[in-house]
Amino acid sequence: MGVSVRVIPCLDVAAGRVVKGVNCLDLRDAGDPIELARTYYEQGADEITFLDVKATVDNRETMFDLVQATAEQVFIPLTVGGGVRTVDDVARLLGHGADKIGVNSAAIRRPELVGEIADRFGAQVCVLSLDVTRDPAAPSGFVVTTHGGRERTSIDAVEWAREAIDRGAGELLVNSIDADGTKNGFDLELIRAIDAVSTVPVIASGGAGALEHFAPAVAAGADALLAASVFHNAELTVGDVKGALRAERMSVR
Figure 1 (cartoon, one colour):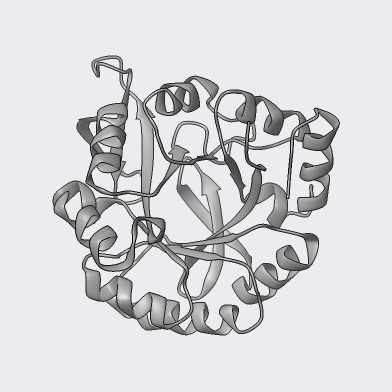
Figure 2 (figure 1 turned 90 degrees about the vertical axis):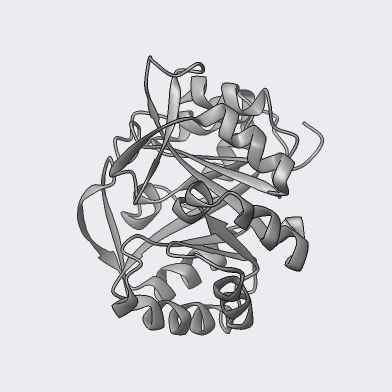
């Protein structure tokens, strides 16, 4: 691999607090997002991802304030997603300190949004977030879901990834709903399937539970590794993960 692997803690946020569940369900409180982001920054995280998992009108203002407060203390790229529906939403989040914006449900409803974001702000700002679940009826065996994994579509995940790249997506955040929160390891088959069609960086998400889970995801094609509960529960640090990757002769930042 020609570039260094990034390690990215993910903060799923609801009503101003970090939450975590299994298969995106049964969410429980996991801490203060700003404190956690600062901890991960100090541990050597390459980026931080915030996902507003409820994304209602009620907590949207909370998210803007949270992004701004984090950007004032954490000096690495911030990716923010959840409830982003228009380029004006993107502009406002960037104005509050976000560096990249993740889109999922709104892009599925109106794929033109991907191109609008890329055209106005650059492809590097537009991260297509794919919440993927297995479906044997799909050509690739995977379909995308919306609403935080709660609503299944009939859209093939690999074809959607290819289309979004053509429309201008600069990065793919690929989250396995089936593996999410299970700590049984990343879905390597999913990573390989997306990597096979991707010309942009692929971020693997969902299932990290032990140090031995990270290197296989890179070998499967991931350019970056995203994890949540193993960091929130202090089971692993960012440094632990980078050390494990270096032990496998993989380049990290």
